[in-house]
Image 1 (cartoon, rainbow, N blue to C red):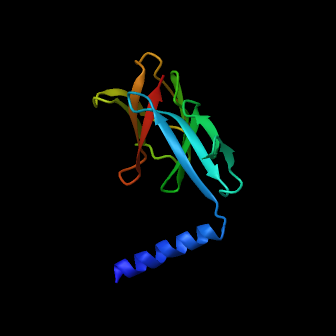
Image 2 (cartoon, rainbow, N blue to C red; image 1 turned 45 degrees about the vertical axis):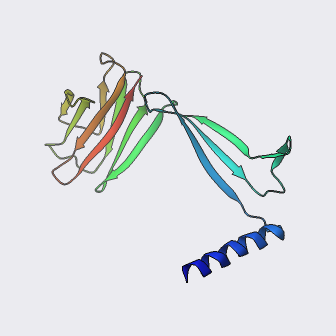
Image 3 (cartoon, helix red, strand yellow; image 1 turned 60 degrees about the vertical axis):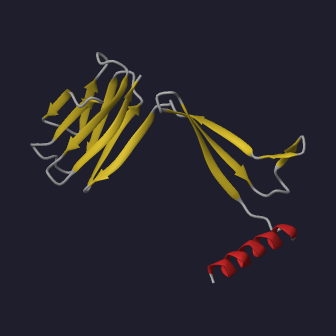
Length: 160
């Protein structure tokens, strides 16, 4: 029964191609360096086979590439609290904004290196927190934000 359904689906796809039905397609291609860090993100868009550029007899999709090493702003809702971390990757100064009506007194921010060693610990967390990691070597760090026992968030931080 499954073979019959698969055959009908394949037949429908072939017929659609013969009659020139147009479909939009989009995919994303990533490139990585030797350490596994993303370097670029390419958006490949083909509106239809009839509209795509043809070079040397081959269809070439439109290609737009964004650099992954541009600093970004990371946001997440932790319970009813909005947390924003930027820039990531950072050259040394990292900012953590916590948008909450009331930040618990026991809120903490921990920063660990990849081997699990505690690099920085912030107590007395406020709405705006600046974390200076310029003295730390370049690499990947793990930031753990604890507002209380139920609201914990983990982030990957890149130091250039």
